[in-house]
Structure formats: structure tokens, C-alpha cells
Length: 189
Image (cartoon, rainbow, N blue to C red; front, side, top):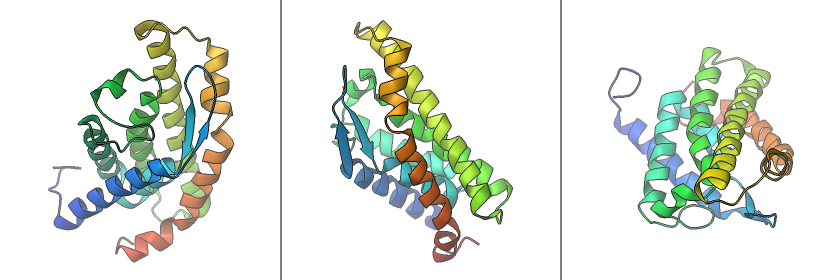
């Protein structure tokens, strides 16, 4: 049950579809060679935003959880592989942040379902901020306290936020612009 009601066949199919699209988005990437860990700019955020927009907050987050489960079981669907050891990679926080992104974006967008591109961009922006908050904090904590590769907040902010935030905001704009058409295409008006 999600949102107090049972998942329909259509809901399950759409959750699976978005989990698969997020997997595909991991392989459409640009690697950024920064130290101590390389970062990847991928299209995953775009598909996570769309999952939130189309499925709503809880179902969108569910589709991301399915994706994370598949990757943590060892199937290499993350940008740099997969498996349970991924939990101690500093960049795993960004993958975990996708759950919050879908939830925040979907919840905010459905508050004004016909709010237009500006409202959808507002929802996508706050979803993206949840993504970065989770990713940056996780990166700092894992690097400094789990794997003993000390990094400063300045390095984390530059490498994990400033380098990719502009490009991710463009993905937010694209997702916000496509929402109405995609909702109509899947029969969610």
C-alpha cells in the first residue's frame, strides 16, 4: 500500500519503468575527475524528477527504492557498479538522495497539479536541493568518519555541489517543461 491505497497494475508498471529509466540514466554520464573520488554527471536526476512528477511523492520514491535495491543486490546499475559495498562509497549519498528528490518533487508538484512550468520548476528545484543535501552530508560523513579519507567542507561543496549544480538545474528545467505532456501521455491529468 502507498498513500493509503493499494498499488494498481498500472502503478507497479510505472514504478518498474521509472526504476529502469533511472538505471539507463546511470550509463548516460560524463565522468568528472576530481579528488578524492571521481564524480559522475548522469541523467539519473532527470528520470528521478520525472518519477516524482508522474508518480507522485510516495510512488516516485518507491521506484527509486526499487532501483537502489537492484543495485545493492550486486547488479551493476549504478554509475560505477553495484553491490552492498557501495554503501560505504562517499557518493552513495547522492543515490540515497534520489529517494528524497522523488518524494519532495512529487509531493510539491501535486499540491498544484495544474500549476504550470514555474510551479513544476519550483518543485524540481527543491527536489534537487534535497538530493544535494543528502549527497553532500553523506559524502562528508563517510569520507571523514568511516573510510578515513579526510576531506574539508570546502572540498565537498566544490566537488559535490558547485561542479554539477548548474547542469542539474538544466535537467530540472527540462523535467518541469515535460511534465504536462508526459502526464497526458500516461493518462494522469
